[in-house]
Amino acid sequence: MPSTALPRRPRWRSLALLAIALASLLWPLQQLAERYYRDALDRQSGQTLDLYVANLLGTLRRYEVLPPILSQLPALRQLLQQRDDGGLRDQANRLLGGLQQQTGADVIYLMAPDGQTLAASNWDQADSFVTRNFSYRPYFLEAMQGRAGRFFGLGTTSRKRGYFFAAPVREGLRIIGVLVVKVDLDHSETLWGSRPEQLLVTDSHGVVILTSHPDWRFHATRKLDKAERATIADTQPYLIQSPPPLRLDDQAWLRQARDLEDIGWTASILVPRSLLDRPVRSAVAIGGAALLVLILLLGLLMQRRRHYLERIALDARARQLLEQRVQERTQDLERLNSRLKQEVLEREQAQQELVRAQDEVVQAGKLSALGTMSASISHELNQPLAAIRSYADNAGVLLDHQRAEDARDNLRLISQLTERMASIIAHLRAFARRDRHAPESVALQPAIDDALALLAKRRQAQQVELIRDLPDATLWVQAGETRLRQVLGNLLANALDALAEMPPPRRLWLSAERSGDGIELQLRDNGPGFSAEALQRAREPFFTTKTSAQGLGLGLAICDTLMRALGGELLLANHPAGGALLTLRLRAAEHGVNIQPPEDFAP
Ligand code: ADP
View 1: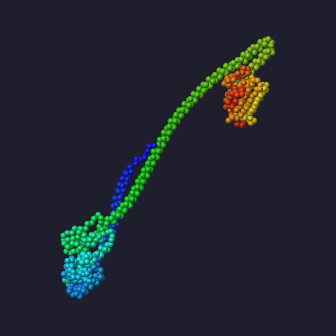
View 2: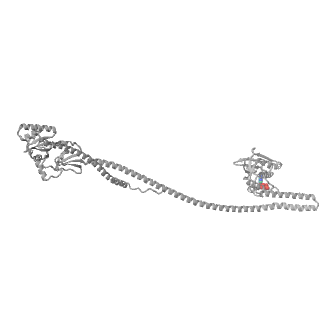
View 3: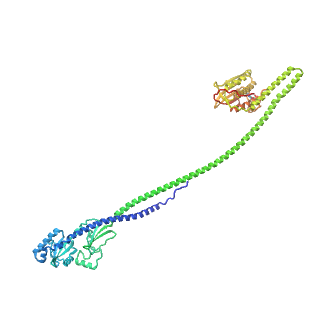
């Protein structure tokens, strides 16, 4: 059978297709995941930043209101008016120390219009501000100008970052001093804690002042111009004069910023990209795996579908092949059938020809038999006719001579001759007769007895010993009763004829037995037996070794014809111990009753 499998695509091609399909699906998946996680991260970090900003602004605002209020304190004003009064200074120092304790501010201090610190809450500490001059600080200058002063800067002595709020102390319209509250901002930085997101607060110069990342501190996030650099040099807000640039890899951080407008700062939160990349990678990996499974399942489904289609195609092909074969077979059969028909026709013709030939043969046989018969009949009948003629002529002569007695003898002889002629004709009739009676069940033993009875006198005269070997139980044969008696009579007569030639002891054996579905009757005598020629020809009509007075040569011919008509057989043979052995094979019949009248057989 030719292969019907569809051509298989190379495996690498399927894999490449799979990879392309995966890649084309993974890209949007990655975009989607990134957007999702970025939104979530932005939201979260925005909230953190907002919280921080709120906290920072809250802290600053809490202290923003302090200087104007504290500037009203009479004790401080008095000191400003009598700055050399040690008692007042002492009182002011203690007052400010107490206030610092209550408010949680880093330092509260009072400055004279020349910038010298008159009293400070840290008067009793090593890094006390008292007597120190901060006139260069912008907050002092702003306050001296009657405005609220603000400034971020690093403490020159404490090295701590702080936010300074300053307010003028007025006496009428005159400014007699400045009150400053310094807020510690180091603390707000430590609040951030250790987290992957980084905090970045830059001042108006873009310099990092607060950060969770110590390395970034006091680095400039943008380029500083000349004026800015001069201001920085003047006001010294940072530890260093010119802040180095901050180099941040923009790809590595996700940034969100809030402008703190009041104070000109910008608070930013920097989220490491890895925080986004990790879940995106996981999502892409999971999604990719799911897609892979999906695609594989799809592939599997397609493969199964292809197999299914292949099987259907295969089935269809097989069916087609089968149909084709059936068709071929049918054609073969039709051819065979027509050949058979042809052969049957030829056979019928041949049979017809055979029948015709047989008819011709039969016809020829009949003609030849007729020829032989007519020759025999004319011979057989001519002899007695010639004798009758001569006896009749003689009788006439004898009557002329008054020899009535002799003439009577002649007439008797004529009568005997006519009897003989009648006998010949009767036998011929029996021979030529076609018996159309269906065979019937005939009891064998009674038929034998009848035949024997007819010849009993002759047998006794010849002193023939009869040796019977017949079973007691009646043997039923398919025959006609008359025909069977005639056959038996003929055979017995022949045996007596044969025995007549022999000296005593003369014996006749009769035996019968079943053989297969038939019955065999054997008739044996211890006469001379058949001559070689007689064995060959005894069945022919008119074959005889006897004189014309003894035999006509029709006995065995008639017996043979009758036996065949009965579906039986007559076998001629010589017994090894000498004498003839005749076998009659008859068909066995059902147990019957001989109710049928004897067949009409008129000799
Ligand atoms: P027929 O008795 O008139 O001669 P048959 O046809 O009865 O005619 O017999 C043919 C021949 O067969 C006989 O002439 C005889 O030679 C031979 N024959 C028949 N029966 C016997 C027998 N029992 N023994 C020897 N020869 C036989």
